[in-house]
Image (cartoon, rainbow, N blue to C red; front, top):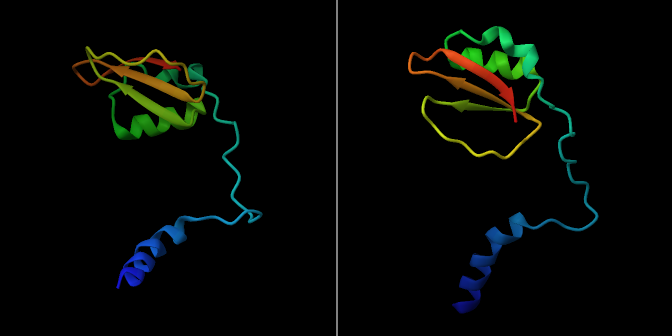
Length: 98
């Protein structure tokens, strides 16, 4: 009985294992550097998911970080991230990279 339980417990783990020498997908390219200047036309616009998607696309960044009013966020710098701050009225006040 213990052998059956042990075998049943290891089957899910075997599905996660990778054999050496197999072709594995390569990590994403290093592209995605943010250019906040390209998205400055959105300052003064309403902070909506659609505006966020457009800012992300126009800035060339890979990730978007919203900055709600009166909030703090980390100071770590990521060249592939665009930061969008907005005020209490949901109006975009600043677009930066990092």
